[in-house]
Image (tube, rainbow over the protein chains, first blue to last red):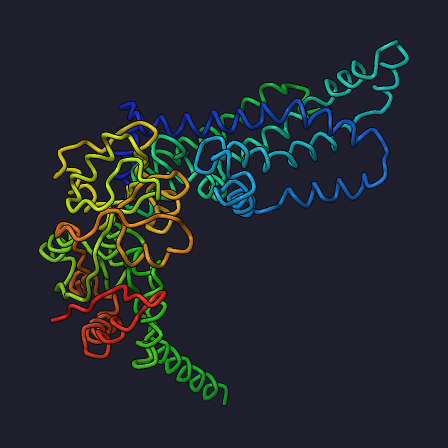
Amino acid sequence: MDLLEPTRQAFALLFSGDRELWGIIWLSLWVSVAALALLAPLCVPLGFVVARIHFPGRRALVVAMQGFLSFPTVVVGLVLYLVLSRRGPLGAFELLFTPAAILIGYMVIALPILMVFTVAAVQGADSRIYETARCLGARPLRAMATTLWEVRFAVTAGFVNAFGRVVSEVGCALLVGGNIAGLTRNIPTAIALETSKGEFAYGIALGFVLMVIAVGVNVALAWLQGEGGLE
Amino acid sequence: MIKRIVFTLLTLLCAATAQAQTVRMATTTSTANTGLLDYLLPKFRSRTGITVQYVAVGTGAALKIGEQGDADVVLVHDRESEDQFVAAGFGVKRHDVMYNDFVIVGAPADPAQIRGLKDAAAALKRIRAAGSAFVSRGDRSGTHLRELQLWRAAGVEPKWDGYYLSIGQGMGTALIMAYEKRGYTLTDRGTYLAYLKKTDLQIMVEGDSRLNNPYSVIAVNPSRHPRINHAGATRFIDWLTSDEGQRAIADYKVGGAQLFFPSAK
């Protein structure tokens, strides 16, 4: 099998601004970012509370969340499929095979990642940060923000991790999105199905973009962290 | 002594691999989704001892797999690309195996009012005019290629935002998506019947001669890919087109209905 020719075609496709190809890339990006943006205001404060406050069942909750970290995304897809199908409990909303379905799937996948990273970050922080802030007259919310700011790099690492997981996962997006051209076809589902059609150029082009995104996000994080990330 | 044990083991291993001969087949999703292959292949194995491993993709992809020598035999359904495949020297010879037909199925509400039409192209024209959801395989399968021929016959470009859904997946998925989206799709009758309980789709258009769906089996050309199992592929083709194979195809029923009709000459 010739590798060079499809690769050449792949770059020709990318740089010719192929609308369908860039539409696929755009869908992958916006759904991933939107899922994380919607989760952030929920997961970060919740992670803080779980880390700081002792309540019955807390340990079980943390263990459960850590377990969900390695939950197969295709199973998330399967459960969501059954829930969103017209014969499922939320069938009336007709969400199956829409971008919204993928968005929900991504949120389910990203939630435990964001929670676990935030909990670990806050637990790792010096508890005196919070207490000092309180002593200096900060309200609890303000003291929470101060603590989170101090551990922002560790929390950000959670977002990068979650982004990397959702942007590259294929099982859930394929099941609940359905790989509809121009509607729910994203980078991983397109790669999977274009390859099975023998359209290698398309697969290579998209695979290349996916790797650039993954590396780019990590470089951006390292840059953001600056010295702080190394201490 | 050790030499002897090793020799015996090697002989046994050779015997075992010879016993467990396999043929690799690339085929269409319709033969797999209907359950036909899982019914036929064990019969072939008990007769010959040969296991057939198959990948179920669209006809276009199946032929591509054959072209690259990643399969020994292909079982597909698009006359035009089959003839090209053989003419280009990728396949040895085309053998008729069986046929069924395509039908246009849709949601019971029938928003485009095509129920009972005898002209498939006219039905597609109405679906387009109504702007109803239409699920297209979009994977260069035999069904997809036939759908495109019908759109050409209808003189309509199959592209309308948000409702012409090109999914790049198998027939079963297309049927389920047509059900979820309350739309229409073109399907082979076999897969439709096999999925009857999973959707509420009904047959809207049938009987147009442009909806005939013949399947054929082609051995991949061994002179291009010397390492493929051509002998096994030939035995499979011989069996499939024999009286026994043809009778087995005719006997396969889902819910009491025959899905494929033998057509070997």
